[in-house]
Image 1 (spheres, one colour):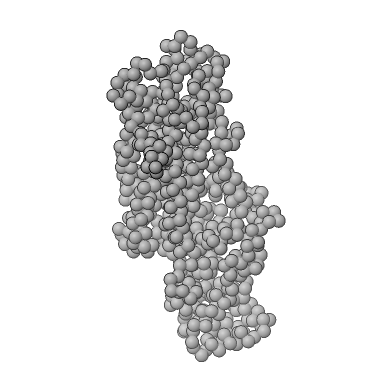
Image 2 (cartoon, rainbow over the protein chains, first blue to last red):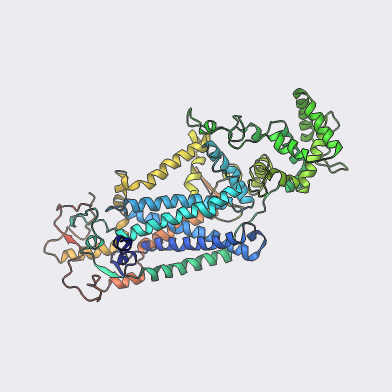
Length: 532
Length: 75
């Protein structure tokens, strides 16, 4: 029963056809198979990277090569997928009840962008750090950080290697099956051409009635194009490699810029840092809250990732230092009234601002003499912790053995060190985009339209709510792309643009020649496709 | 270090611009170039999908045409 139903629903001669319409002869038709071939390479190289773990490619030459293969497979995937999408758009490929095929393909395109984005976040190098801290505001603004925290490497890695690939493979599989079952859409009819009206549910055989068919070997074509994609990807990986700028750590920053490190640490203790003032999902502030008019999903959802900056970055780590001097300093600070704490903090911040970077005999930051209370002892100990590497571990620790949530260290580093490094790499300010990579490498070029809106110097795209304004704009555009077949006017656009006349020009030439041999003909050699 | 092209509100790195330019170029080429193997296959006039790959003289023409202003096919 089941076998019979499967055989009826998925006939082999449609899934693996040995012939297809003669009008399928433009090279534009190759981009779909090239996309599938590239996706196969992405999955294959990604599987190898997953088997050896996320650190393998940073320390092993073979691993780095596989990472390069993965990167260029992704570039090839989007390259061919976008071209496939353009081709199908100009052909109006959703006609004749193929709307669902288009929808599945467009959703797969959107899912693949998220999958690639989580991949860029999973690089565990400077690129992923900078992309993560720059992208966090949008997800925070949407109130989804609790379930999609771009600073949580483990969560992004899980999305990247399982959830999103599984969804993508499923969508692509359905898309391919729909293409095979429904067949390739016929060219737009010539003006005056009489064609049997399309009836929903007709068989492929009936749909192609009157259409000249030619031999076709789907497997051979996919194998050949797979070889083309493989050669292309291997060549790019071998020639261009892939970027891998070292990530910043609390240790590296404490060693390279002790004054900056202590200055940021002090702002965390004093609750004057950007994160201390940020608002949801980290606290109840309002320094970086966004809204759609009066509606703020960020405020509505609240502090789903609570961080007490003083406790997280200073007092908590100092609890682990069991020396009498440090314990006494912390007790003195904690026992002092808030006003006194504020006086010490202000005085120490002023002194740090004038520090020349020299260190004392203990390796602590040297500042002008003054009344800073216990702060020099406390921050000397914090600096020691950071330089030893212990603070990197402490900021990941939340009582469990395995730790992959980098929210706390990344938020700290984003106060000063990450933007400074990004500035050195020419990635800062309006020059930054989530589509960029360090060095001369292409990044997520497919996000160009997304980052474009940030360059508009007015309106909602250049204010405090810019992130969610851009998101809302792109959400509308993405939905329009997905449901294009069902939007009146837009779904007729390709016919007006006329690119299909070039793609199917041989078919139209033959049709015109055939028409001349008929008793009645269409008007002239320059007959155009129907504009109805 | 990334280099940028900045024209008005268009700001993009050179590598990303190269990729997008390549996409446009390859697409334009694909539009004008037929697939060689299929192009040759379609030159074999008359093939209409028969298993025997023989000339199908009874096959209807590829398209049917009427005078200008004739009925337009429903889609």
